[in-house]
Image (cartoon, rainbow, N blue to C red; front, side):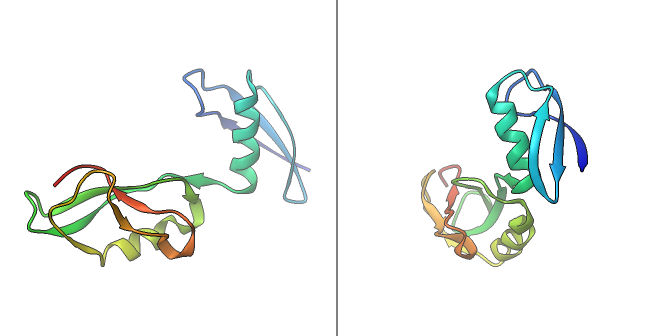
Length: 118
């Protein structure tokens, strides 16, 4: 059995939680003050996910780089691979906030969208 101490990021309270893991599986959590903390702890130790915010190159825009964001969370272990892929993406202006820049990045089921007009 293994325990990990982590801070919850689901709300400003930042509860310090202790998560118990056995054979790589979530067993329990203590220290959370709400159910969202328990869900966050379970996900964080079994399948951590993150939003991705970065930039891609744009031609014909006011600036040389367009800010983009993932439309949903991505597996944490795939973030670097997604960023490497996006390094080679070049879009043509004009672009509206919310436009899909890369659909279904790396087959993960998540779109990369523009986060501003340009």
